[in-house]
Length: 399
Ligand code: PMP
Image (cartoon, rainbow, N blue to C red; front, side):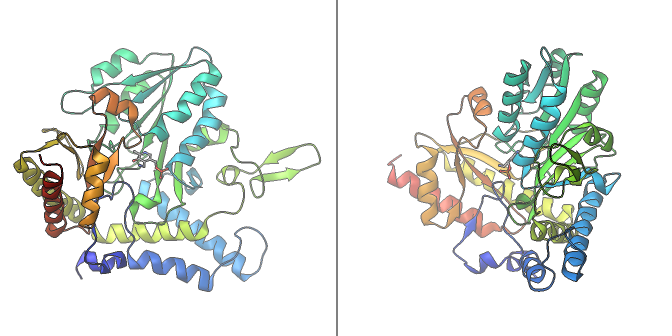
């Protein structure tokens, strides 16, 4: 079956969705899994010993195993369910950051980081009198590893970066960054929010200490995310959210805490989200990264060619660098929000603004831009509508 047909939102043939980097659309199999969960298995996992509780516990823990296999983590206990990449990084900042980062220590961030991987570390740096430094870029948008090697030192406690920039789509070299960080005694957090829809990450092979991602960018529902951490690190970290199910014993004045992963999963969990995520991973594996990349890459190249041909559009698309299907661009002399507004009349959805990456936009000296991002369900018709819409922008603004 044509892939687009597996996503009910595209029953509307006038929808030309080019914003998969913001959130992916959901295939029918994932929508079905949510309904199946509530119709058959809904109970509060770990709270009781009757059938529905055991069903929901099994579904939740099986979903954890699916994520474990997806990331090739050594143990399923190293997979913590959260609500998003943002919550995963906040968990790490409040727990690891406030506990282990101290006065005079340094945190190195990628200049391409999303705000979700900047603002929590600014909070830690301010509270603990630590210093934040950034890895800057080569002309082609790739990390300047010499800059990184120059900045890192024994004072660096953590290196936190995005595997893929959500603005430029450039893929950063995970293995090299991890090696340089570890040689200097620093831990590494990989923000994989934009990566896992395009390529696999093997946390064991790449020796990653922490990794965060959101289900919703990966065909899964919103409200489910993952923090992966190595067991020996997670065990040393204090809890983040305190409450039900994350404890061992509670007395009037004191509590002891459950082993990982429960220590980090206080309160009733998003079981249908976890189940939806495991169905989404199975769906993604069924299509396979080769097919996904082929479709996205072909559309990206077609769009790039046509955007450049228009003559009134600037693309921020560097060559000779590994990337995923994302194109940042501006219509010369028109604000990105105005462009996106007119494109919407053509049913074309693109992201506009600063993309939650203001330090990167300042560094690149781009006040704002549009971003077209491609998913496996897009086709040439979507690119053609984008171009038609941009011609209208030219007409409206008399360019
Ligand atoms: N990091 C990156 C690289 C992202 O692209 C995003 C989402 N745009 C996030 C983090 C935050 O994800 P969420 O809003 O799902 O927490």
